[in-house]
Amino acid sequence: MDDLKHTALFDLHVELGARMVPFAGYAMPVQYPLGVMKEHQHTRDAAGLFDVSHMGQVILSGASWDAVARAFEALVPMDVLGLEDGRQRYGFFTNDAGGIEDDLMFARRGADLFVVVNAACKDADIARMKAALEPDVTVTPLTDRALIAVQGPAAAGVIAAMDSRAGNMAFMDVRDLNLDGVPVWASRSGYTGEDGFEISLPEDQAEALTRTLLAQDGVAAIGLGARDSLRLEAGLCLYGHDIDAGTTPVEGALTWAIQKLRRAGGDRAGGFPGADIVLGQMTDGATRKRVGLLPEGRAPMREGTEVFDAAEGGTLVGQVTSGGFGPTVGTPVAMGYVDAGSAKIGTSLWGEVRGKRLPLTVAKLPFVAANFKR
Image (cartoon, rainbow, N blue to C red):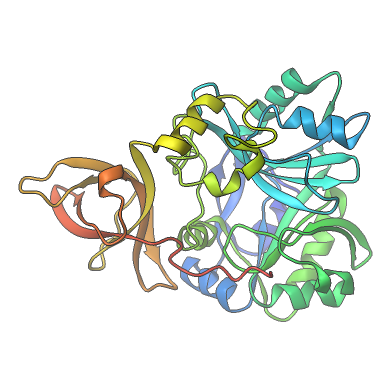
């Protein structure tokens, strides 16, 4: 662990009895004494607190919002210019082949754009933004801020008790709040499928505020293990597994994130890396698609499990990219890619586990309905 980077909450994790593991170059808590299953259900029932300070936080600033937004639109297929102040969107960087280099969240803060990227990709993402945007747009990595998430049905009450303005926030709203005397940037969003908040705050005040939050009724520290099972049940992609540089947004079933005016025929159609490929697939379809998969029985089908069709002898049609036991669903759940002809919900397939083929079915995502604040 000494060779890994530490977040501002490392000592607190150790104090709380967390089992620390390497993740994206950081020592991160995979679970606490409560255990992954109970941490998962606690987040569904009450409120879980996650340390996500390993992720990259970046501010983009320029002469005007128009200048910043138009420049950023050259890197992503989203409507950035039309983003209202105090609002956030999901997006992704694409490459010339239409693949996803990273997925991210971006929020408008006045004339600036606040971008949060994945930990494993943040150095490459920052280099990408600097090369494409500077000097007209200044790219400033925020190395003195922590990031925590409070997720679950009790999250809103906990945060609103500290600052009543949080109670009026809708899903994907972004506000400056004051939590127990600490000025924070809060968005009503998360990676669990539950209502909640992601909170950027000064690194030197992170431990004190986290202790205060953990002292509130219903709030418990949650590790990466439960974070993964929660996002899988919610049908949310994990970069480097469910999406990567070789996966297009169409294959990844993420075209919902591409606004109409960036699509073919839109006012600002294309103009991002790989636009011809992505927009072409949106018109003509892709040869494969990310789908939900429900294995029969109790045996989970993990990442890398090969998937075959139901024809005699079975033809290889895909592969699992994320899989495990869904504590809320009460059965194994998985996501993966299958040929377009096998992607219809209800299609019967087979997954090969330790040399034995077991039945599974293409299922609708998410496995657990989202509880976002609308």
